[in-house]
Structures are given as C-alpha cells and as structure tokens.
Amino acid sequence: MTIQYQHAFRKYVSDTEEWCLSVLTDSEGYSVDWLENVRFVLELAQGYEENEEILEEDILTIQTCMERLEHSFCPEVERQKQSARVPIGQHKLPPLPYRYNALEPYIATKIMELHHQKHHKSYVDGLNKAEKKMQEARETENFDLIKHWEREAAFHGSGHYLHTMFWENMSPNGGGQPRGRLAQQIVQDFGSFDKFKKHFSAAADKVEGVGWALLVWSPRAHRLEILQTEKQQLFTQWDTIPLLGLDVWEHAYYLQYQNDRKTYINNWWNIVNWRDVEDRYQKAAMVKWKAY
Ligand SMILES: [Fe+2]
Image 1: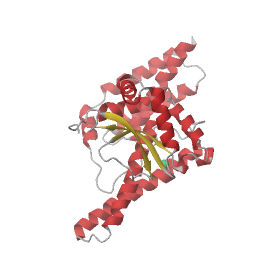
Image 2: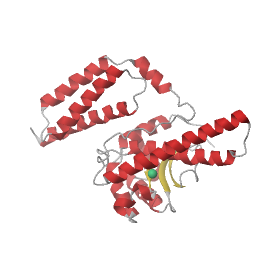
Image 3: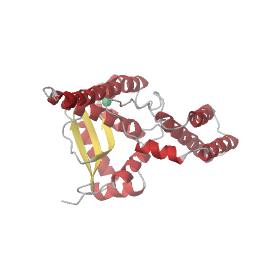
Image 4: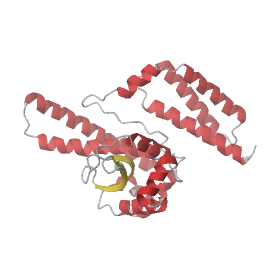
C-alpha cells in the first residue's frame, strides 16, 4: 500500500472518529439505539487508528457502518435538536470533541484536563447560578444585587461560550491554512493569510494580563476583524460573531510554556481546525445588517 493511500485512509478514519465524537458530545434528541451504533463505529475507528497500517477492508467496514447509520437516521429528531433551547440555569459542560491527550505535543494533556474539567466547568456552574439568581430577582422584584449577577452572567457566560468554541476551533488534524470562501475573505480583508496570521499572533501576545484573541465577522461592516478581549467580558463588540478564538489566559498554557506565551501561540497554529472556522464563517456571513 502506498504512503499516499495510507494518508487518505488515516484521514478518513480520523474524520469518522471526529464526527462520532461530535455526535456523542451533543447527543440530546438522538435515540439510544442509534447512539449505541455511533459508539460502535467510534470504537471501530479508534481501533483501526491504533494499527500500524490501515487496510482497504477496514475502510469498507467503516463505510458500510456509516451507510447503515445514515439509513436509520431520523431527520425530524435532528431538526428538533437544532431548535432546542437551553432552559434557564441548565447549561452543560460539553465533552471535548477529542481525547485529552489529542493535542500533544502542542498542548499538554494535563492542561487540557484542568482547562476543561475545572476552568470551563466553573464557567458553566457560574452562568447557571447567575441565570437562576436573575430569574429569582425578576420573580421577587428584588433587584438589589442585579449589577453583581449581570457581571457574573457576562463573565461566566462569555467563558462558557468562548471555551465551547475554543475546543471546536482546535483539532489533532488541524494546522495549515483555510480554504474556500473564508480563505478569500481573509485575503480581501487582511491582504494575505500571512498578514492575518502575524496580526492575530501579535494581538494574542499583547493581550494585557488574561484574555483572548478573536477573529470575528462583523455583520455591520461585512468584514472580518481581529479583536482582543481583556478578561473575557470586556472589550466586546456586541454585534460581532467570533469565528476563531485563542485562549491566552495563563491556565491555557502556563504548566507547559510558563511565561513563554509566544511559543504557545506559534505552536497553537498547528492545531487550528480550519474546517470548523470555515463552517462558523459560512453561517455567520449569512447575518448582514444594513451597512453603516
Ligand atoms: Fe481558558
């Protein structure tokens, strides 16, 4: 088997794995039996991935399973799932779309475990609490502490939403450059991919203290922009849609990189999941307010 085939087979297996994980991550609305089959395909793919060589018959087995999954899939359930809303105070920590060690050597397993299980979890808990307290304030008409809970909702809410995007923004099969319409838009708005990357890296490096660098789509200017956030609730342009975020809080890199944020940023480009960013862009670009 040529190396070229092996590469394509590995890509197919890891794409399948990624898809299974994304379904299992957000499994509400799917039938138990169907999810059980997805789990079976995931285990199959993970097993093949560990083998030294992936055979053509392995790929055919996965394809047959995937076809079966497609045939037993109920689109109505999917539609209901898409329109589902999160009730007040019931946000959940989304599972990582890959294993904790999947982004090694660029991001250490320990960082991913702490970052996801401790930091992100505390944002989810904090947001749920703030939402419930604000609901309580509406019901009792006692707004004495509303300023505090609004701040908590902004801080923990931004933390929850940005981290949820951040996990999807990265992939063990990431790196390289975006393609398609996003690639064209980057060239149009920043001059070239290289110019965009340098600007984004500098913005991430210069975030004062803790915060994020974000690539956003502005539905008002019909352009992409790069923004910094200090902490995560300040410096926000409220009607922009984040597409790509880089977490430069110390908890995201300090265990592995100490104060060398620059190296963390440089290495991070190797795991950017451009397919996810492209998907977010395609959807965000449909939102266009009247231009001013
Ligand atoms: Fe973080």
